[in-house]
Image: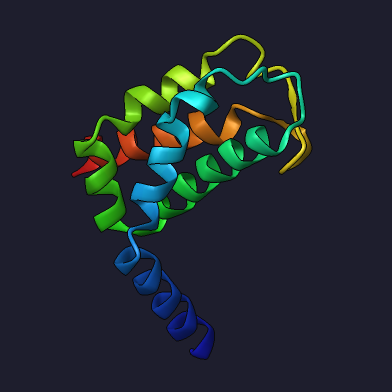
Length: 118
């Protein structure tokens, strides 16, 4: 299937470029930790997009998952998801049906399930 081959190739490029590390550093950075979840700023969107990248990579890349688990990503993701307003403020990246903190909670859950099942 050509779609599968292209997707696998894209995933390999993302792993080689260590996109999982870049996204983790974005969500861990001090400038992004102090964001007010009720505000829609470019920094807030970047932080949420980094969370979505971590969710996507953790669901399809064992290399990314191993890196994230060994670098304390689960506690960071859960901490962000539990920030005041993160689960009640609507996402401007995913749409109003999802909260800003949902991707962080989903990524942490994905990593925890992988640890539990392996």
